[in-house]
Image (cartoon, rainbow, N blue to C red; front, side):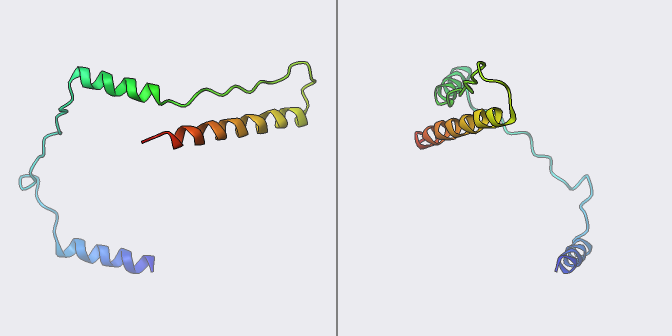
Length: 92
């Protein structure tokens, strides 16, 4: 199927030759209509809805074994997932 699609694309390219550079109309880059003040307001909104940082809370009193490190990572992942879901529910 992929070969058929590739063959069809090649046939379409042959039917429609590439335009010369002089024929191509250059579109200028879109200009931003946002002023500095509106950009600052937008950045403040983005900062205010930024999700909270979640720390691991590793217990340094326990020896570093594979089991304790994996447990800490699993707990961190669980807390981070809960925070991100709560954050996503608050988005408009």
